[in-house]
Length: 319
Figure (cartoon, rainbow, N blue to C red):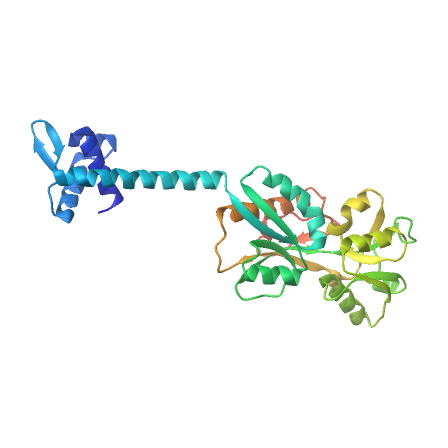
């Protein structure tokens, strides 16, 4: 017994005529009648009395009819529910963002999600290593991870390569420079993220490769505090454009690219390989990629380049 047979059976009962029932479902009468015969053979009882007054349900047929109507209605309702969920998904979606990229992504992403009021986004700001672990444990649905190491059960899709910038007071001595060398940075008083920050790891590696040491005047665990201290002229720092772009454009601080290629970091989309994404999470993932693509394509996210097989459709932007 299958869905097609039940559908044909109900149509025959409703019309009381096999010809009209076959026409109602746009099926040749020969194929239609064969399905009814197959159904009667499978059940082992006669479902219709065939006479001059048409097709009349037997007592067994009447019993099956009530069940068949209920089953077909449930199938129809299920299809409608799934269709509505695809068009207007519902449910909470936990989205992990690193503190730096979150500053440029959070607001436009939430604006995109407003088109789907049934989705309840939960934005979690964490360091990249924590984000990948939370994906693996199922606490976060999707995340944007920085320099993430492969982890069992977590899918990583490379998206962007991002430059690091020297961040200084708006009236700093190098404010008009197009780029800075590591040797010049070594002479500056630096305020850097606390290890194990991926940015700190990049800076430490940069100076180690150059055989130089830097002057550390402070370590800070938060991006906002780092930027505030730089604005106050208490030191310099190294951050990506995503963390400081809005302040630079307001003439609050200066951002000068680092010249060394090794200072670049990699951003990847992360989600679970073993826990299927809900329809709401799939939509949020799609909007996250669109948001990133829009920012990059419009030139609002400086110093990034697409990476991966197709760059997730992201456009390259100039320095």
